[in-house]
Amino acid sequence: MAAALGHTQSLHTNALDEALALPTDFSARIARNTQIYLQEETDICKAVDPWAGSYYVESLTNEIAHKAWGHIMEIERLGGMAKAIELGIPKMRIEEAAAKTQAKIDSGVQTIVGTNKYRPESEETLETLEVDNTAVRDSQVKRLEILHRDRNEADCQSALDAITECVKSGKGNLLDLAVEAAAKRASLGEISYACEKIVGRYIAVVHTISGVYSSEYKPDEEYNEAKALVARFAEKEGRQPRIMIAKMGQDGHDRGAKVVSTGYADIGFDVDIGPLFQTPEEAARQAVENDVHVLGVSSLAAGHKTLVPQVISELKRLGREDILVIAGGVIPPHDYQFLYDAGVAAIFGPGTSVSKAARQILEILLHSFE
Ligand code: B12
Image 1 (cartoon, protein in one colour):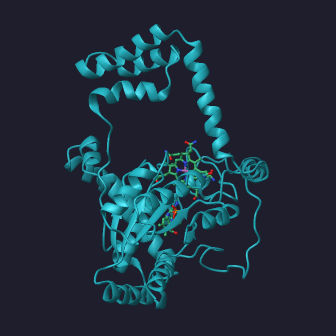
Image 2 (cartoon, helix red, strand yellow; image 1 turned 45 degrees about the horizontal axis):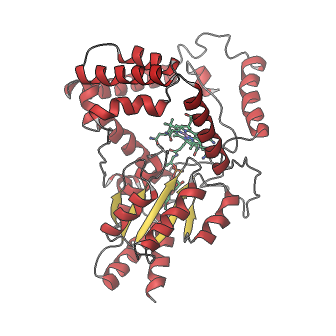
Image 3 (spheres, helix red, strand yellow; image 1 turned 120 degrees about the vertical axis):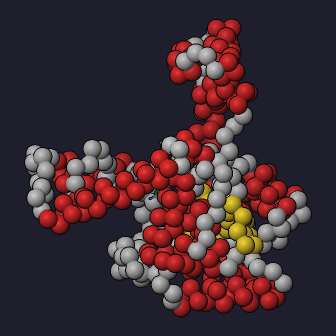
């Protein structure tokens, strides 16, 4: 309702199981009907600007416009958006804002009803949609096989070659050629690979920001205890606890990974962040090379049941099964036991306080010394 009254151009209401899994038909229907209810029973879409003239709302609009202008000017000063992206500035600003918000939520300065306040003593499990990862993969592979079999291979290859040539020479309309290749039944992977042959794959620069989480956190017992446990660990081990946060598979959701990285760094961990889209082999190798104590997998795209057991067996193969593997992100509760059985030491879903999780991780680490 706030969005509609505030002139949003597009919105959707999220399903009630949004942070657990893809929606079920039931949760999707409630979400959709909430929108229809607002639209058809309250008539909010009929007034063009119902809050026009409200001094308070107008002053907020003015404030947000000026703040947005500040960002636009920062980008202009850097030489435009392409330059700003190369320098990682827009992503860094988003990550700073996310870390600040997380700190406010974790320390209770910002209330999220049901998450950091008014929580039930025990939570009922909600039925969530189960997707069979392996079956989805198999069916996609089969579809690709049919695509390859039924297309005119020579036509398709020459459309892909035209893309490669365009990238090489810088002449021609790349989008037009991509559409042409798709019409000749080239897959998305083949179309991007036709470019990759010349320009390689873009690797985002990973910046770690520090001090942001702690600057917004109103210190409490939880935070102080986590810091004290870090000191105890460092005394025993002779170095700070070292954690690598990994993003594996086709999962671009890196906000949570960045937020927890910032939080742990501020609490006193040495933090390594793996690049996006690592394979389990790459993640395990990086963890071993960096000699971490903990490998923290952040998984939001439902790959956990495949990727996490793979990374654990890869660590074993490398002789480092002592590295503690933990997981976080959107993992449906009914998959927790599967991951524990695979060797995961702890799982932290949406709504987890960073300092609370840090404390739990440190307790497990210290326990392993005893
Ligand atoms: C923001 C968001 C996006 C952004 C991501 C921006 C970015 N750079 O991260 C955008 C818009 C790009 C996006 C895209 C998509 N998304 Co999305 N997205 C979300 C959303 C709404 C919030 C995620 C988030 O940032 N939360 C805030 C952070 C701080 O929380 P968090 O990651 O959960 O982390 C906390 C804990 O989980 C834990 N934690 C997390 N990692 C770790 C690691 C360790 C070691 C530890 C200790 C703790 C920990 O601690 C954190 C602090 O509490 C979720 C739904 C949701 N509400 O969770 C869907 C969601 C993850 N997305 C989903 C989907 C389907 C997609 C798309 C496929 C949509 C599409 N069809 O295109 C694409 C895929 C993109 C890709 N390539 O992967 C689904 C995934 C379904 C599933 N898992 O079965 C979700 C669950 C929504 C839903 N219910 O349908 N998405």
